[in-house]
Image (tube, rainbow, N blue to C red; front, top):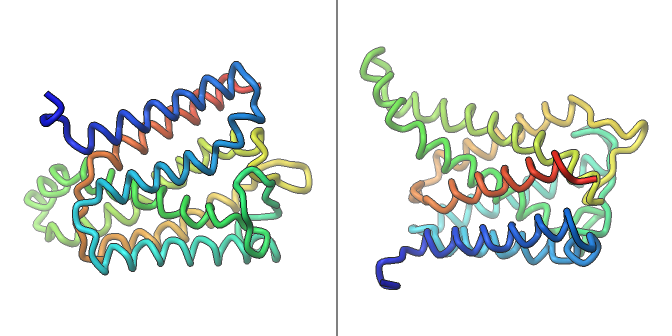
Length: 230
């Protein structure tokens, strides 16, 4: 029986378990205790994504490094200048910082971009090929446009879902009147387009069922916290 269980199912079960524990803990028990586990949960999600990635070649490594470095760079610029995203500062929940930005933020950029890219690639391929056949456009051109633009839109939606929860949990704080600026989402879209272009053109396998599942799990996690967290 166990031999029939795929690594995608194992990874999904682990992710569901830990996100459920975190959700229940944050809603009904001592928040501080479960907040301390946030870095572990992020690192676990990252490890499971790497484990379930079929083709871990140099292109995949390059994509990860690009997400990490670009993510850290834009956040450092944002924190110290306010030119990107807006006026905000990070709390201490996410652990060790470099230039006032937690290193886990770079990993989180990878998780979000990778999961959004894989999800769009997986869920829209049949539709893209059908539209391409009807319109005469090449499948490659349609796929690139969809993965980059639709993936970036999905990433922005994920950030919109996460933002109020992150503020309540002390991941980061918006200065001034405390409101989340629209400019933040505009910058998220631009950076996501850049990283999803790297994702699309990097030559590694874009098939990972767990990445789709993890995105849905995290969206449900933040949606429930956004709705019920006090």
